[in-house]
Image 1 (cartoon, rainbow, N blue to C red):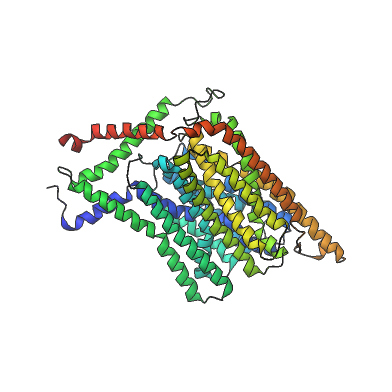
Image 2: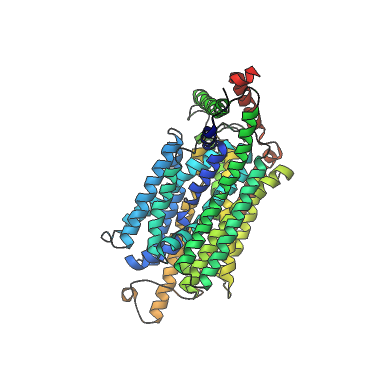
Length: 576
């Protein structure tokens, strides 16, 4: 009676697979792959500048609004507290398409030339969509795998870091070497991915799987192969002229590698499925019931949490112990968050400034446009390596040696200083090395920031808090990019014009050539980043005792309690 009929089992297994935690991880990988369009700004910013006749200060202003949209995710976090995940992802996909489609329409002349504030609004809306993707996918996975949050954050943010190189392969295969069409691809592809997987990403009760860490490492190996493949293909494409079929072949290979994690998940879930269906008195319906029970327990606990939650304005200046669930205001007004905010302002603000200006840096040092795009691809790929490295290595150091995660942030910021100095004092080929260092250090900062916030302030309001934590990034970008780097670049460009006996009205595009264009800017960025590293040491000192303890004990106890509730209510368990 319980035995399934011939062709019905694959369908039941598919339902079981799609309803599980691991498929949520795979769907999140793909959503994250589409959530890194902001890192491609260096490729198409030249088109915006040339087509619309902007100077560098105006272009940097647009870049600031891009960073503002990408990092001010408080709204998406607050919205996620009151609406389901699928609605968060749908809002993000609509914003992504609307913002980038309008930029594409402006650059291609489909609409009249917009005012500068229109372009700032378009790119801010498009970039802000990635916060809805982050909140929907990243926060969900951290809650589903709380004991592997460092690893999970490294993997997910790693895919965001690779997205620039991934999308470049896609647009070369679909549209050819046309950077205007890249903007159109950025508009429709991430939106389509979010819509396709919108109902498969949701919070489920964390489970215990002895193979969990092994599966994470398999995901890591696949992503490393993907990153190395992208690096080789990118280098080859800069050395040789690829025909259309070769671009299509490389894009196909990328798509195949993107779906290898799904094969790993199917294999793992198939083993668990067979174990469940072979137990005495356990039918396929009972196996399906395990997922529904998990969701039921999650909903019941969530409702219970809401009833027992502290009022948002209560005990603002009397926060709980580190690692417990802070309210939003308790976290935002804590000294730990303020120190973290200042370190992020210095570190991410400087890194974003470097990434946004990399195209113009290459141009000022005499590199051809084809080579300049190589620097941006290197940043994207090494951004990935930085993210997975900081996620996996910081988790390993924390588990084995109780090394505070903020200490790794200090080392990353010191490494970033080296990259800035290589741009300030360039030598032949030094920009290749600087691109790798800046990409790696920029990528490494984000998983560390998000993991530290989750560990110090709990997961209850993580959707809002991790978005609040990165607010320092656009503020740092505005001051360091627009007010410092952009102004100093334009000043050097005007000096160059005056030496030629020309004034600003004589040229449409203000361009500076020479090593002096960015020297003073990047000396300032180096000093700011060094200050951020010193500030992060304050957080290391404050949290040293906390990280010496078992920071995941709370989640193991909650999991045991939840499993006992499931066993108590599960009729199949009672029969046995």
